[in-house]
Image 1: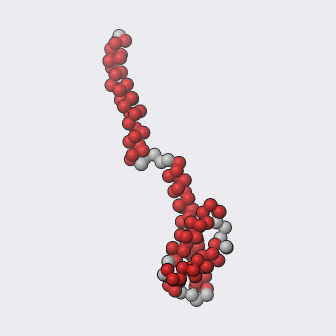
Image 2: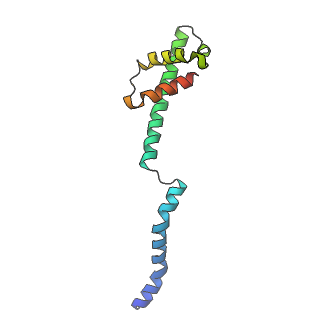
Image 3: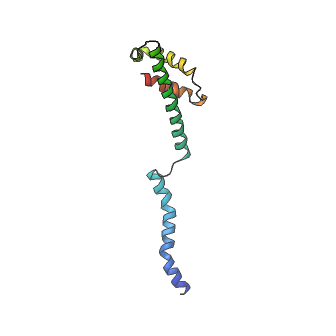
Length: 113
C-alpha cells in the first residue's frame, strides 16, 4: 500500500475528526449537555435557599401550631410586617450562611404568603 493510498483511505476519518472537533462543542452547549460554572453555582445556591426556606416554613408551621395561631391570618400584603417578624424570629434560630440569608428570608416569607 502506497502513501497516497493510505492518505486516500484516511481522508474521510480526518474530515470527520475536524468536523467533529468543530461542531461538538456547539451542539453540546446548545443542547444543554454541558453546564457552565455559573449555572452549576446558581443551581447549588438555589438548592441551599430552597432547603433553608423549607426548614423555615416548617418551623413557622410548628410555631403556629404550638401557639394556636392560624397561618391564614398572616396572608395578604397588609400582614407583611407580621410575617416578616415571624420569619425574623425563626431565622434567629436557624444557622443560615450569610450569603443567602436575605434570599432565605424572602423565600420563607413568600412560602407563608
